[in-house]
Image (tube, rainbow, N blue to C red):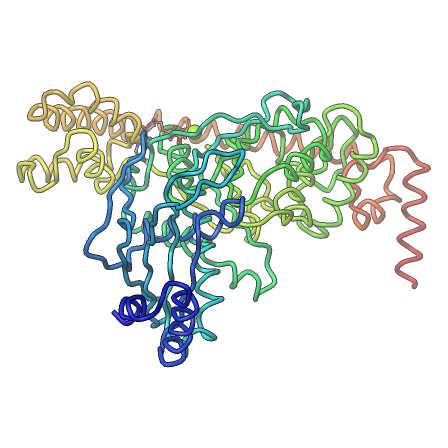
Length: 525
Ligand SMILES: Nc1ncnc2c1ncn2[C@@H]1O[C@H](COP(=O)(O)OP(=O)(O)OP(=O)(O)O)[C@@H](O)[C@H]1O
Ligand SMILES: [Mg+2]
């Protein structure tokens, strides 16, 4: 109003000066300060403008009367943006900020190599002068971080594999990638809800835990071991984790890696915010005996936890020096997950899966390497309810009471995996009414089968147990004999073997002698 008055009161040559003067006076008395963030900063696009636009498009705290809604092609989410010359309020740390989207027509078309829009766009941020020192920097950082996070989540996630063996591509990358579009989520995953909630919380805490990991001096990584029978959802769980966190997946094919150093190189080429997966770890490589490094002769103190790291490092070093043959070792893998190299990059999750946890070396399972052991079991009644909802759209309350009770009774006994049950439901999904009853029949049949096997013919059952026991005894005896045969020719070097823990020490006498001397010297010292 005042500016209009000035414009009419002053002659045109004085208008510019008068308006500047007016602005200055106005600013002196105003309790607000303003920041203009233009779309084009000179000739470059202003990153902050894009960040603010993204931030405002998804910020839940934003309240506005008029917003323009958009939905990108192939996107599942709606985004809203500020209409032209409209404003919204946002709150950050208790301070209110007002954003105005200012769009004006460009007066003169300046020369540019790039096409420039006819409109001049920008945001104006208004905050109170007293709040400026307190929040401005933190608020802008928050906006930039949020925008980066939104961009990352919107980006297609990738599934990497090293199935090309050790070869690298033209950019020097050992990993090949494809877009990752697995539909599994924690909603579709059938498992005990309490366990599921615990895992989701753990993942959430991990993703938000940067300052915690920094404060406690821990590398920002976490290990999950998923174990259980085939078809219980281990791979689906990995996909759900990736979808939940918005991370890329690196599916490490251990059988394609020939040396520990190659493993390290693969690790170095992974990015932050990713899940590194080794599926069926018990089948990938013989990891139960960390001393069985490559094709070298074995050390006899297998499965001993003492001096674990020394053994691991020694084995890794010696195999690396050899550089030949398939020399990937458990120690190499341990270094991969827990050694100094594991913290290059940050915010990474390691997931190992196995059907046979008992086959794994305890060193691999200890906390720090595998922080959480998740048992994926046969389908429970709670999990079954989730499958019914997912496949048939039937809630437990809609099922007849008696059928539901029977389902509850037999589900556990049938020991069917979620994969088996989903097969039944997929086949019957068109006839919802019959599907539940037929599933109940299948479950009853399986439960009876299991019951028959377990209870069927006590004598037969006992015989199996006895046979197993005898087999175990025979195996133990065989192992003892092997041990004795290995021990007898070099009894003197036992101390050396135990202390040095060389993963792949030679049987060569000279080597043994040297190691003994070193150990003795160290002890005396
Ligand atoms: N807990 C589950 N919740 C939902 N679907 C499941 C679950 N478990 C298995 N399925 C279904 O069964 C199929 C096989 O499951 P998945 O590959 O995850 O099993 P797995 O435990 O990884 O098996 P394996 O040990 O053989 O690798 C999946 O396509 C999925 O649809
Ligand atoms: Mg699997």
